[in-house]
Length: 139
Image (cartoon, helix red, strand yellow):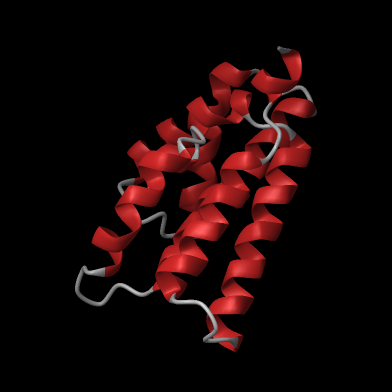
């Protein structure tokens, strides 16, 4: 789901069935991983908005992972690098919307069976990818 940070909805949606077929992988676990990712990007966006140079983001993310022990479902260095590259593409509002979409997906996965896990994840991906980005606002 690495393309989610880049808002490549079509490619990300293609991965959903393959990810859900993996042993011991549930839609709730996927939403948790995506939420960790988006919360990190939102944290990085706030740090940059407060004046942190973007060149320091990767080391700041690594320090955050070290202090929290968070599990980004990939090596810490790869996560820190991906998050640092994504921060300039996301606005604070876009991060908030993405986190709200992931929360809604988490609730839906735990409370309803009207939609399949795959459908709920795909809807969350579309919602996250549709949020406003800094690049789109500037265009």
